[in-house]
Amino acid sequence: MKITYYGHSCFLVETGGKRLLFDPFITGNPLAESIRAGEIRCDYILPTHAHPDHIGDLEAVAEQNPNALLVAIWEVSTYYSAKGLKTHPMNKGGWWTFDFGRLKMVQAVHSSVFPDGMPAGEPVGFVIDSQDGVLYVAGDTALTMDMQLIPMTCPTLDAAILPIGSNFTMDYADALIAADFIKCNRIIGCHYDTFGFIKIDHKEAKARFSENRKELILMEVGETTQI
Ligand code: NI
Ligand code: MN
Image 1 (cartoon, rainbow, N blue to C red):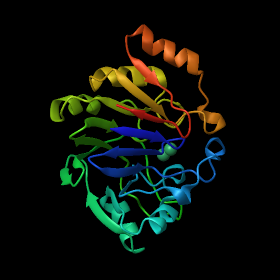
Image 2 (tube, helix red, strand yellow):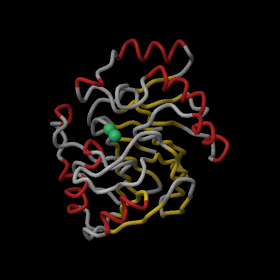
Image 3 (cartoon, helix red, strand yellow):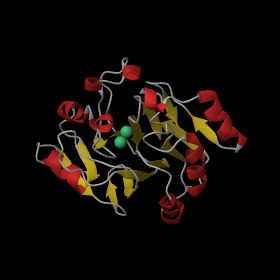
Image 4 (tube, protein in one colour):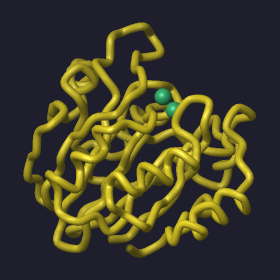
């Protein structure tokens, strides 16, 4: 499984021969000025919720990738379906098998509404179970006991992408507890540094993880890693 970071919570995951784009928000992220949203090629678009820092470039990406399938919670799927996008609606607790592998939509504790005020259901996370790995993408969320259900209902995780910036989501101390809940020692951080509210001390965050025999990966914007 190949993971490329486009800043904030935007990741391209290449797995099962397909390209999955999570939370496309690039334009307007001062840390992602080197990335051109219009040049991203993907087969799937997976927004975790409808806040602007997760869907800012979604329609532009969909326009550049007319065959891409948007996978989202019912309300978000319906919203984009009405705009002509190809969609697959899901809801929390459900699995669906796509051509890259299986996907489960899971709980996230946060809020969600479209910038135009349209309702967006609830925020979600995803578990991707493919031939070359199992990955949990938490989306914006607080630490929640429900994370304990993931190792009970999904195959063993190879890695997880967790928010660590605090203010809007859990902080890295809570993400460390989340890592225990999901039984995963390899954590890729997201949702930090982009705005003043969520700036973190990288050295301190990484030290907290390694003291607890866990790895916190803070990727450079544009960097690709293999899990
Ligand atoms: Ni949010
Ligand atoms: Mn957010």
